[in-house]
Length: 316
Image 1 (cartoon, helix red, strand yellow):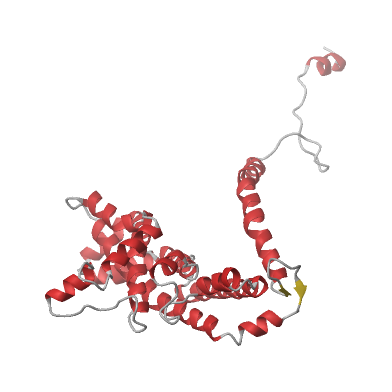
Image 2: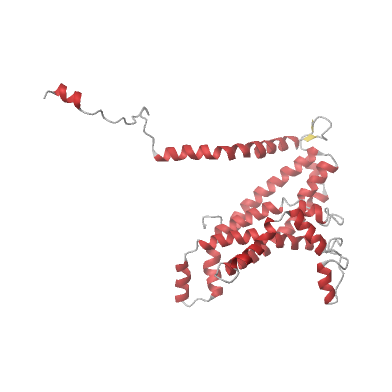
């Protein structure tokens, strides 16, 4: 058979991608990246439209004097100068710090304890998990109404009824400047345990049981295993819970609005409620935008600070 006949009958060689990229074959990694981009596009578009653009608009309005009715008037850093002289705003920031400094560590500790206890096979395990998680999925308005009844200073209030049995009360939990903030903190702790417990519980499912078996062989007790194995292995979950709890704390509004409306005498006013007052009661939208920018910067700073304290998710 001649060379010409062999060339005519031999199958064509498969196309390969040359240096110029003229081939049609794509690697699995490229296909995965392409599909990842396609699937992430709706969420990215949503974030851009409903979060990115409003942030840019708020930053722009923060340099203006704007009351909704009249056109914005550029005033430079005038709003920021006003904020630094606004005692109520910084008092509200302090209240957020107090709520976070007390409520978040307490709720995280209780959530971890509940998660460890409910991670074991006990009778009624599902019922107990549901009971702990239920306050989180309950609407905040409903939660606030329940606690309004609990804190009711009259004889019908549950808290004062219980205290009355031991000869204490009735106490003005939500109308006393010295008691109102502590009463709000108690509500945030009660409402926040459920989600934190669920995250810890999911993380505990991924802890290698061989670590506990090895600790048992070495004679470690429950407390030693808790602090030497459980807590370090849950560091990524702890970082996530801490950051999300800080952000949620500085976004608290409806609970304060229903329970105390920032009172008495601004004793429970928080940043978001102060921004609401500035924007929708005083109609100073430019100033409210500047307050929102300050809040955004604080949240970014707290996120980085949390990573430094907890060590992030990579165990460093």
